[in-house]
Each structure stands twice: as C-alpha cells, then as structure tokens.
Image 1 (spheres, helix red, strand yellow):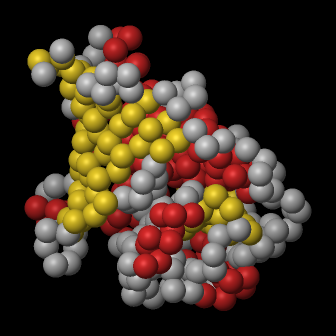
Image 2 (tube, rainbow, N blue to C red; image 1 turned 30 degrees about the horizontal axis):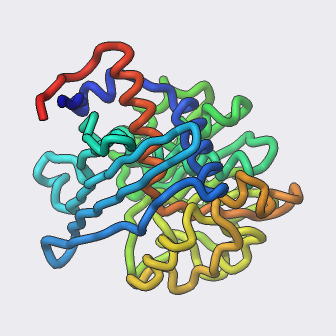
Length: 324
C-alpha cells in the first residue's frame, strides 16, 4: 500500500535513451493496431478563456506491456513570463490487476520525448530510406526532442538547418543541440532556406485554431517527409492536400480536434500508425512520395513511456516511496 513518486529531477536523472522510448512507443502502436489497447479521447477543461488547458488522458496497453496510466497535463501561455514551464503535469501508473496506483511521476520529460518518439516511428515507416539533411522550424522543447530522435534514427544525417522567429531562441537552440548530435546544426535565414532540400521537415511552433501557414508545397522536394508537431499551423492548404500519404496517430482524436475547429484544410488521414506498424495499411511505397505524419499526442505513448521509466526507477532504487 505505497506508491513510488518520481519528481522531474528523478525522471531526468534516469536518462533513458530516446532509442528505448522509440522502441516502447512503436510497441504501443503495434498493440493498438492489434486492438489490444483502450484509449478514450482526451477530456479537456479550460479554466481561463484563452491560453490554458487541462487534459485528462487515460490509457490501457495490453499484450506484453500490460499497463494502465493516466496523464493529467496542463498548459498556460502566460507561464514563460512567470518563469514557469508552459506545459506541466503528472502521470499516474496503476496496477492493472488491483487497480491500485503504483507510481506518480512528473510528465514533462515524457511529454517531450514520447512526442518525438511517435514522430520517429512515423519516420521509420513513412520517411525516406536515407536522410542527409533535416530542417527544424521552431526551436523550443519539441524542436530539441525531435532532433535527438532523428539523430537516433538516422546515423548518416549531415546537417540540420534550424529557424525560429525569435533570434535568441534560435541561438540558444544551436548552442544546446550542437554538443548533443553528431552532425552540424546551423541557422537558417528564413523558413524557405531551412526547408528547401531537406529530407525531413519538422515544424514545431505554436498551435492555433486560426493558423497563418507559411510553408507551401513547392519548398518540399519529392521524397521528403513533413512532421508538423504544430498540427496544421505551418503548412499551407496546397501542401496538406498534395501529400501522397498523410497519416496520424489516432483517427478518433483527429476527428475530435476537427470538431474543435482545427484541421479546416487538412484532408482525412489514410491511416493511423497502429495500422501502418501492423501492416494493415502500407507505409512508404515509393522513393518520390511526399509524406506527412500529423501526430496529435496520444495516451498510449504516455502509458508505455511511463511504464519504461517506472520499471527503470524501481530497478535502480530511484524515487521516493509514499504511503497510500
């Protein structure tokens, strides 16, 4: 009758490699595709009229994972001015037999890494076979985690071209990432300079129900893959409609967001990653296909990642045991 508490510092000290998170997330998508997961759409509340959210994200992943978890995550656009993280929250892991909570952990690291891991799974199945140049537009948390994921997935990347409307954020990004990846990372003077010639393009700016997209199709070379972490905020309607394959992580969740006013110009996805990983729908079929994976962030990814961290912490004796 106790649970393990893992603070944000505890989670970061574990230093689980991004490659292990990618493998766990891919296993979760495979089980989703096999019908062995339970994942109702996010439940949202908005305590302030604009710029805030709280999401409850429950999931059960069966099979060899056999884990139940709930993420309670919130965000406030005003937190940067307060010196606080924009997104924060907790994950509760429960024993699927007794239903008792066994672990509570900070979700900041997991949210960053599991999002990039889902994109990496999409890249594995939909991306180019060889990746030499990548572009990152938006140099925040997701711009960082996605570059780490691409470095783990593609050992022959030569360079990353990064752009951000905030020049200081761009310089901080380059200073932070250069020692962490085995290839050159350089600033781009404008979005077009970053995107043209890139094999994979990650856009990781703010999300919006009323986007002002700036990336047209003619910047994107045949065979490239787009990874819009910011939903449809960066990509012009012609680019969205012209993708040979547009996938998502969960059909139901995309429809939920469509009802909330997002994705006005985004075509319905041809498949979700569970269908692709299990072979029910094809991944990339031709070298010249332009592909896009618009992953929205799903609770099974939090669940499998939290299980990975919980077991690592339990095995190493990290964390604080609290009585129930």
